[in-house]
Structure formats: C-alpha cells, structure tokens
Image (cartoon, rainbow, N blue to C red):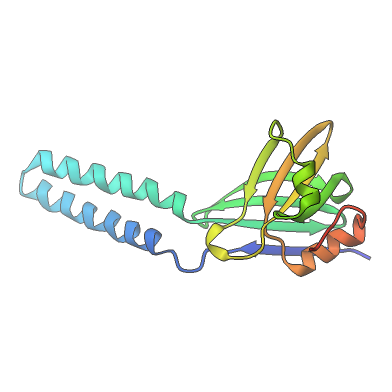
Length: 165
C-alpha cells in the first residue's frame, strides 16, 4: 500500500508583506509622476525604493512543504508563492532521532558541527521538532513542524527513532 502525505506550512496574515507590496506600487507611481514632472533625481530615488521594497517582500513570504512518499521525505521551501526550492530529501530510515526540540534525547544527539536546516515558521506556534538525519556519513539537523499524521507515518517506517513527546 502506498503512503503519500503532504503538509504545507502556510503564512496566513503577513502584515509586513502586504505593507511592502503597497509600498512597491506607491513608489513606482511616484517615480512615474516625478519622471513626467522632469524631476529626474527624485524619480530615480523613487524607482530604487520601489525595487528595494519589491525584492525585500519576497523574504517575508516563505512557506514550507513536507511531502512523505513511501518512507521518503522531501522538504521544500516556497518563496513568495512562486519559487520552489528543494531543501532536503531523505529516507525515514536514515533518521537517528525525531523528537520535539525540548526533548532531552534530541539535545544529547545534537552536535554543533553538523549542518542545520530550518524549515518552519516561527509565528505559527506549532511545536517544533528536530530530526537528526545520518545521510551518507553526513549528519543533518532538520528543524521543522510536522503535524500528527506526518509523525504517524514516520513512526510507521522507523518506530525506534520517533518520539512524539
């Protein structure tokens, strides 16, 4: 039987993103008005501010998607609801321990020299978990926020490594 599950951590109401989006268009309109008024230095400054707010807003709309497919997990980062970037792909069998961030067992397994991947949204208040993954002799600490169904599927494939509490 195939096991497939996707979980999307979505940014719901991002005031900073909406503000920068409005500022992008406001500065663009100002740049055009000053260009028609032949005030070139202010038009250039407004255009630069529009470009700066446009490029800055992308960093405020970051979502994460976890996909579980028959014991393999893909973690993607979605920037501005347009660009998808694969952070990591691993097999659940490669997990040494998967536990909440405040769990003593996971604290003992962490090592500062390892690679750390952040795949969660701070504002969401969900419980953050850490998966210590041993992939090809390289250890990776993945910080993420799986839901109950995702944890159940991981437990099904690697029960000795998954700690829910």
